[in-house]
Length: 142
Image (cartoon, rainbow, N blue to C red; front, side, top):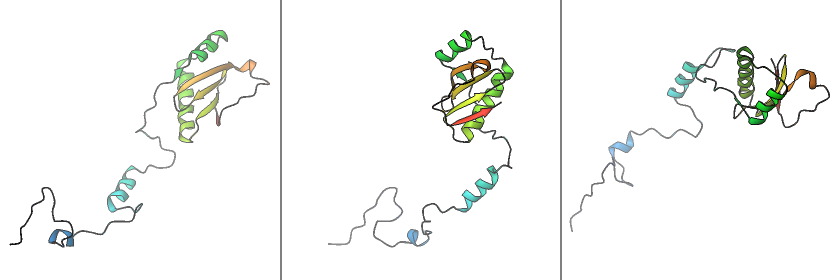
């Protein structure tokens, strides 16, 4: 019986055979090793210390029903400027890996879920004295 040649679709060589296509292959890099493309990419996207990350656009903050009620009950006004400062504070907390943060403004103390970008509760500055804030892993003063 004559030697038959089998064709495998979309395969450059038959497994187990040494062919011209296999001889020119480069050996695989160890896992975690960076190639030239990775190095160029890192240099391209590297930014100076303190520069803003423009690829991440902040999502708007939300208020939980509890926080909305507390703001209303305690007559705490949140103008656009204050909301912008709080949003920036949430961005800073996220950059540090904080999950739940206390944000102190000139008028209020806010507990914020950084991951969900949701203000969980609010308290006016006058009634903060003597309170213990729990279940937070960071604080930002704005």
